[in-house]
Amino acid sequence: MKKSTTDQGVSFLRGERIYLRPPTKEDIPLFLRWMNDQEVNQYLAAFLPITEMDEVEWLERLRKEKNERIGIVLVIVHVKSGRAIGTMGIHNINWKDRTAITGAVIGEKAFWGKGYGSEAKMLFLNYASIHSI
Image (tube, rainbow, N blue to C red; front, side, top):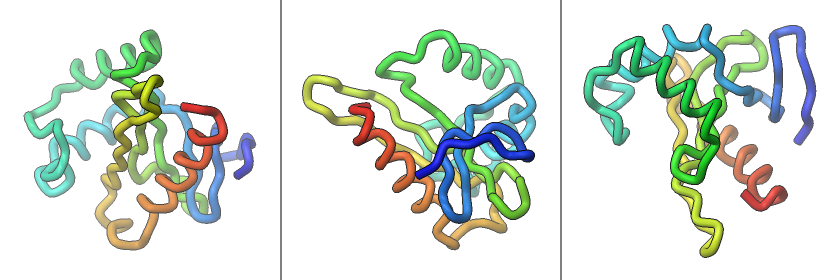
């Protein structure tokens, strides 16, 4: 696990084929496309139509609150292409019982079934366990 900055942008956690970085306002069009795609959101809690304002408010809450319920969300970026392909998050953190819910979304369908979500989750869980998240 390496922390670095690349010419493709900020890299918070780096794996072999992906890196994780904080979301930005520039990601909102991608999030809108992914979260409003019924194939992508079929297994997610968020399944209702999402507007640009919804995404702006969600991103602002992530930035401001950083609490147990909202948790931490990072963007999954494919190293070779520099393309954002999904998100990885940890939510509903229970510090007392040391439990939480994690979730990964691979929004770019060309990257489905290739282990990118698993790589992102293992990278993030390793970080979380080391830092007692």
